[in-house]
Length: 176
Image 1 (cartoon, one colour):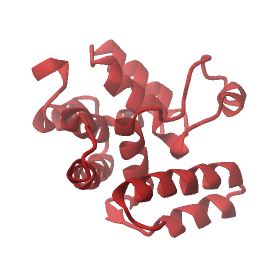
Image 2 (cartoon, helix red, strand yellow):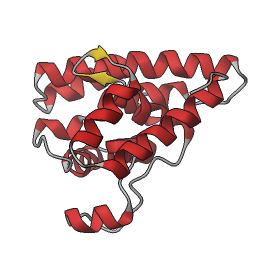
Image 3 (cartoon, one colour):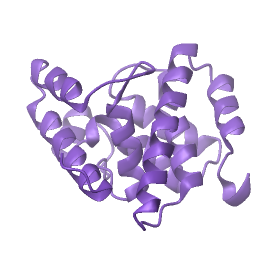
Image 4 (tube, one colour):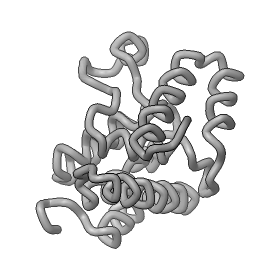
């Protein structure tokens, strides 16, 4: 692992070793592919992005789904990542990818440790955004995800997804 970051093959092997279901692994690969595509476009716009971190983080973002399929999979995944010695930037992607971020108030309601659970870095935002655009292993329009969140009475999360969409698309030079 160069700079402690697992390669694509090593990350997929970590998912397997931790007993992630095949459909979760397929989802993680689809998220990683989209995240890398987005990264490539942003780099062509002149943005500096750690591509190895984006790929490793995207592949491992749902590591916690090996144990849990609730929103807590972010915390569980971060704990697993920490226990196997993954670098802190990967751990942060894992714990910050859910719902385009979890506010401090939401985290407190979930009983999560006090921490930051919203994507802070561009790499974290790219992974979180790609995750919102992949349903199982298929790409979906962002509106589909926003509408789903609204139907589930998660209007704050829907608004965070919309804001993240606007930020990434404006960086790409597109109108949201």
